[in-house]
Amino acid sequence: MRMILLSLALIGGASGARAAIHREALWVVLQSCIVAHKTAGIPFPCLAVNLGTDAGPGYAVLRAPFSATRVLVIPVEKVEGIESPILQQADARTYWRAALDARHFVTDAVGGRIALSEVALAVNSSVGRSQDQLHIHLDCVKPSVRFALQRRAAAFTARWTPITVALEGARYYGLKVGASQVDGFNPFASLASLPGARKDLRATSLAVVSAPSNDLSGGFYVLAYRGRRSPVEKLLDPSCSEASRSAAR
Image 1: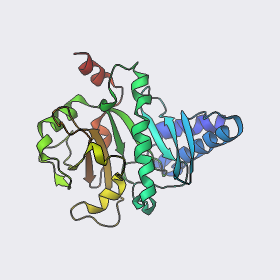
Image 2: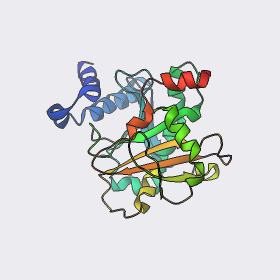
Image 3: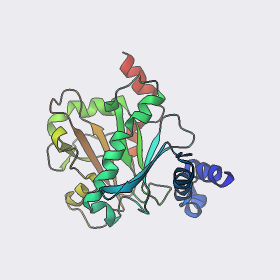
Image 4: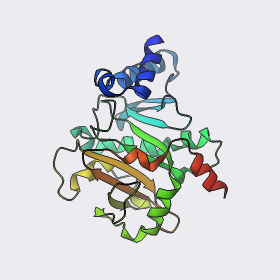
């Protein structure tokens, strides 16, 4: 238990030299979830554990340390990060669908005051993450980001296109995934077709936001950033406070 608590603290607070030493802390916590699931039938300290089947790989859902709303979706197999070739395979769609299904853990945390469509996904690049195990962040999207995307809904198509306006200070590529395409979509594999994309995706980060209400076809907007920083978490509202106030109006 002490090891689990220490690892959770490192996930939430590691930085600089400590982050370089403890980049496997999330993996340690994940193993404890798997052991608890196998031996006691409970996922603690995770919220859920799925060990996978022949139909798809397994994953776990974990509440991020020191956060009321942030949730992480993590493969149970070793997958270093967004750049892993494993994610280019068809089975990696499982992690995308698992993240969409796990959005309710975020809305449940705020008493259902917001819709699932207010929950966004984000995956940091290798330079922007503190842990070397793939983890998809789930949290509320900032209302300012949703408003900006709503104003530019017509710019999103089935192909990667540069978004002409900065979102929270960063310029993204964007594409649209229609509601009928969601189940078969693999956002990680889609990064291979980014304009000028290289095989190495270490400097690429990813975010997914539900299509705004003025996009009647529904689905999701996928955003990709390429560069030495990883700004995708700036698109998220870490306490859901802004999203809750916006929903109340």
